[in-house]
Length: 334
Image 1 (cartoon, rainbow, N blue to C red):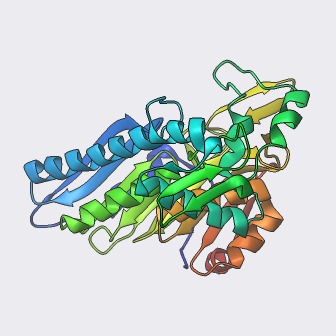
Image 2: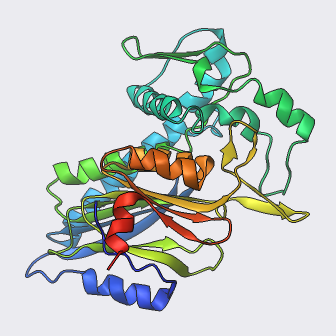
Image 3: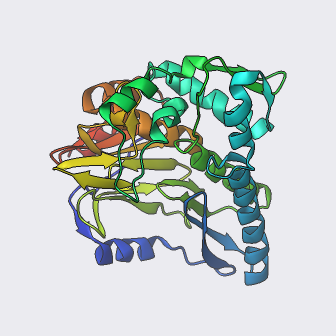
């Protein structure tokens, strides 16, 4: 991928102006925007449709799909399939919906690829953090729980449609990949309904379907330390982008920022990076890889991205410096 990137910090008003310039003018149809809260974040669906009624019908189906996936994969809902798996997975194979099999199998792929930097069993430790209340587990508790986690303890039988854990007390959380999966599902639904131009977002995960009348959609990468400002602006078409940042869920104590992106190797918040943005074809991949790159850090994260075809990244390190993957770096040069 090669994108012209505006990489100086720009105010929100100017960004919205650029966004407005990307809205295509078409003889017929409307640009329909809507937002709802699901999966612990804001979901937005924007699309071109022949008329308002058509747009609302398609959008209603899209949100129904998101709600269905949320009810299935929400670890905090005791009635969800994921919670059922977490309760019984160590007792033997548990039959789960195909969607969970697909997401867990993809998560396992990235766990192996990153040598454990991405690991959905982080929840074994992560469940002991409370970011709203500003509480973190003791070092002793982290060590006791950390030795239990590991993606190698998850046994996925895709043919049988079951998942089992070979480690008692193991827990999994799909928060680092499920929203991307949901975005892809909605984009596929819109395409099947005949939609040619759309943008679907779930928190830090977005995917652009088509383009906007021959022009790209401008996506802003949020500045991790300045609210309502962006560190970079990227025009995208038919591309997914995900950003993982230490500003999403966090609290600070004694000068230390405790955030929700945990390093599975330490059981503590990953350090060295403020945000990591990854661009791929599918949101499930950009979602998982943005977390992976954040945990790996600048050097190892860029090395991984540069080894993957069709993948690009922008990383903002702890000092606020921007780092680009090879293809993006070439695209920013004069």
